[in-house]
Image (cartoon, rainbow, N blue to C red; front, side, top):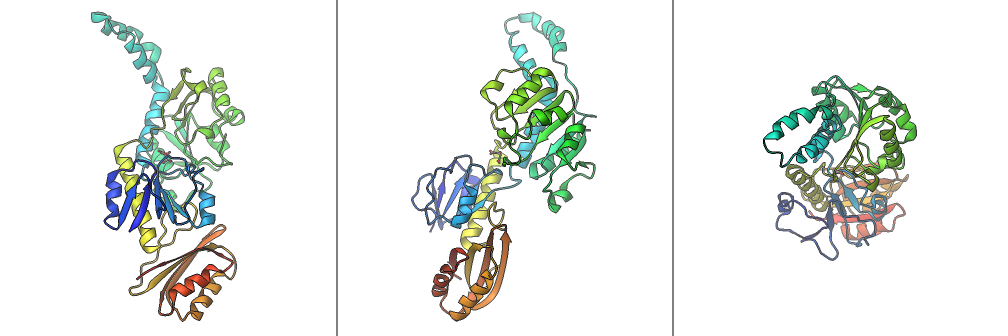
Length: 389
Ligand code: MLT
């Protein structure tokens, strides 16, 4: 029986995929895996039995990803599962940053009690809420992952001229991007060309504060900035100053600070991008499937701290899964250990990712338990697990 600790409420559409050989609960000692949405795990003691953590979402800044790799705990996320939900909110935020819908709705509420006069007053006062159309304007998309791509393609369909920037653009992402999206080679190109800028980058030491006084000064006058990615990508004080000076026309974010609340031209909302039933179901299903695949077969799909590696099971073999440091001679040592234990390697795959590597060996004959114990004594080893036939 596998034990799954759920730190947040996870859609039952996902958890029911676990089946009978799993038990899951919000409280549990010594779990095999943890499912999490937004709960912070940075101060959590990780049980030594723990094999995997799956985040039902894209960002993993609530998880100590690097520490997990050092302990041989695989961290998964669910890229793309909530991308459509976030895309829709980004489009909504772009419209809200243009058309003054929020203030207009607030103003209409002030007309309560005016009886038959309401229609006349509404007509008379509407001029104060005029705002520009998106069509014909330019949009800079910073970060072309699952969400950035959908936003770029949708904005193009709305008649916008779209510029995309992503220094880590994957081949797969490039295929999914509309050919009409202009590829910018630097952030400065985005800043120079965009009436609207939307951020879709993770929060890293390189991206924190990327929208600051200096970058704002390179942007077009009356730029509108959308940040539904991570709050610390934007220097709040610089943003407020840019809005006050008129350099920026609007800032839409779902990471409001106290200083932003109530400020004119700030569209502030809770972090709602992924809060749709469809996205919660998609994330839960993907997270559960990835955890099951790892626990039952040792296959890694969509990890943020270890390489992706999947190998079909060889019938009648035992599987040895080895998380190890990416150092010379490691694999030669594994095969030597297997040979000494009288084990025949039927199939083997290995992949590395920066300092870490993962090797799967499907083996037959000999003493697998003794071999796993010997492997554990090797310098490169972080974790060894044997999955029975
Ligand atoms: C994500 O990281 O998946 C999004 O920011 C949505 C969320 O955290 O709820």
